[in-house]
Length: 362
Image (cartoon, rainbow, N blue to C red; front, side, top):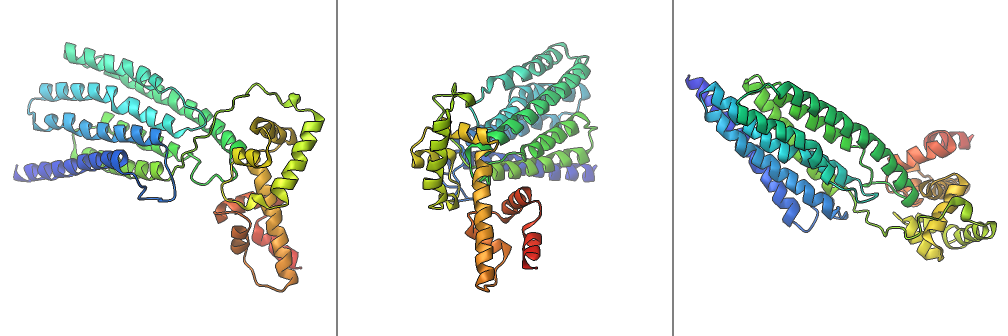
């Protein structure tokens, strides 16, 4: 008996620590102005606020599950879990979806559907509380799985669309891509699955809290290292590719050569298509359609110029008998990440930079 009480006390201490971590993370995102993880990055305000709300919900979740650990009657415990599940359905579950949607910055998506999707879970939990019955639980669990399947399918399509938007608007994709959002989904799903499979053993409870810690750390890192990509919305979206006359297309080509290629503007880190359009004095939509007519994205255009710059620098170094490395030349060619350079180089040239350099020496 003494060992059981000690184990439960130890767990409740751990339980309280995780709840406190959630509240600290919430306050950090709401009130800290700077960025502790990546000082040179400004994260999206919308994402910070909704993630803070999610952390607050996690802390409150610990609060409304707490009474169940002090109830001795099995019927009272079951009712306590139903009440906690009702609160989860109104807060934690919809906020999970909201945080994932807020990571997408290609457009401001409405967030209310997340709460609508979670509404049947809340209604079902309320019915279980009122009737003191668990007859609906299997149906609610199936609905929960189907709901998450729908969210995953939607996010797969949305992230692919988001990736295309990034490549159409930005030269550098570091701190912008959100494929890691699938990691968040996996963690959430595991946490909820553990709750649903909870057999009353402390091992399940400890596992859940460990997942919560991982989730808090991951989301903090993700929010802090994701750049704010707020850009002006296009005012002339109706412009079609076919609307670009040959004279305008030729003009854009010459302007790009004059203002981007010859002065090596492509070496500027993180220059967006909006900034380039302003620099050369052309409508941003026309510039975007120009790249579409070439069958490339803006990102591919800039990376192509940078890789050609890399090749030129390498040939100059060989002629002057200067020892160089691929990483050094990649940074001098406008890339901030060597992994990004390696992927771009292999995509354009068909082999890695080191393989190309070895073949060029022969």
